[in-house]
Length: 40
Image 1 (cartoon, helix red, strand yellow):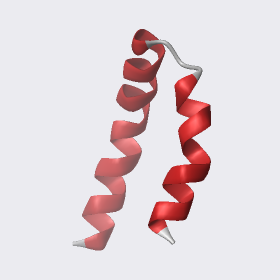
Image 2 (cartoon, helix red, strand yellow):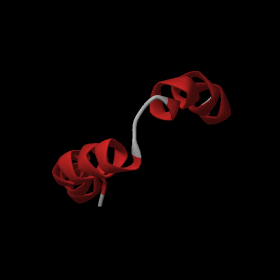
Image 3 (cartoon, rainbow, N blue to C red):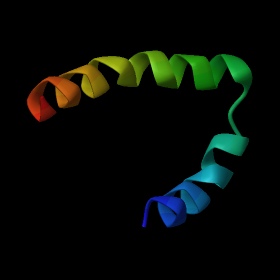
């Protein structure tokens, strides 16, 4: 399942510049941190 979602998401990331991808990752880090906290 995870491989399928990775394959489906790939083209969306391909259109982003390196700066845009960095911005996206930085924006998602608080959400990822919160999810890790809940999972622990």
